[in-house]
Image (cartoon, rainbow, N blue to C red; front, side, top):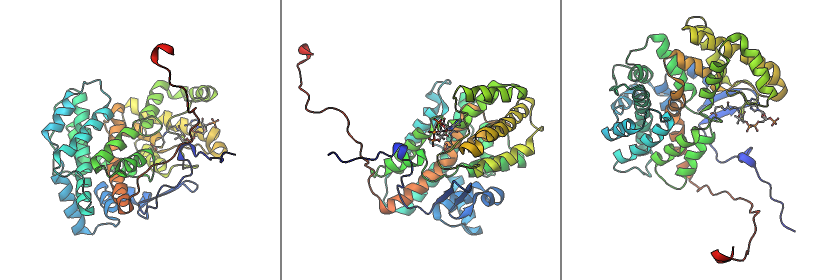
Length: 382
Ligand code: CMC
């Protein structure tokens, strides 16, 4: 009798490693980076501080943060080769495709892309995190037919990103909102893109190869593409008064509503809750289009919770409210996933660095259910 093999589809419920980086409590709706509550980090911290925390495992003191900020600023400029790659893509290209290639090109700027030394890998991570923001802004500008802007080192990471993208220095509220977006997207344990990064790096491929795999895995609408899909749905709804009918029909047609549901959270995603508090702040104070999108998102959220929340464990995730907020910051939907990838580079790199301490090649099995020992016929006899 053949042994009964249990297949874990999508690796659901399978633990792949021990990690100290991130705890996602899907039942209670809680999220911690290195033990710190996501709410505290979003409220009181900065993206730079969160990057330090994720990479080094502790919050920095003032001197450590100042040195880290300086290091990040020194890494902002991207190589000419990378700029040329971005310019060569057609304006119709998807921005994440451009990022994937530009990201891959960064290894050419490093004379020793692979290292066994943890400190050297942290330096590479800082380079990747920082340069990816410059790349993301450059992709956004080239897509709009504008020239790439050089970084402004008088600004912090988030303000500089918005400046490089829009050409304008943001006000304090926009700077804070961008920082919160970066922080909330920085890390989320063994999600699909982080796992892809780990799989690539478990072969001892360099960290640039790993994050390139991460970018590739982030692309789909079930992962990093969900926020764009969600806002496009809101645009399709158009008038807030159409919201309930639209959702009703979509659910009747068994369509998934993007920005809802999660493999781990079976309750409200705490990141979505934080984003909703920002939506509440700007509600009615943005432009007409965004005000309408906000109203649609709030009405859709109410209805989805009534229909699928408690009964099915399908609640808003981080991607539902992020669209109108990105748009409020002048970030276009086609750039959302690329900005998400830029935020997540720190999570990918932190996991690789931790995993390499006890590396084991990922090599799962599959149950073969095909035929064997077939007769090989010459081509004219088939
Ligand atoms: N709208 C309507 N129904 C849903 C949704 C949704 N957004 N999500 C799940 N369901 C239903 C699904 O149709 C299925 O129903 P049935 O059992 O009747 O066939 C059931 O719930 C289970 O869904 P699943 O897709 O098999 O479950 P999963 O654990 O693989 O789901 C998910 C996780 C994120 C892929 C899924 O909820 C989904 O596709 N959501 C929409 C895409 C999305 O918002 N992705 C972003 C996730 S958070 C950020 C990130 O990680 O990038």
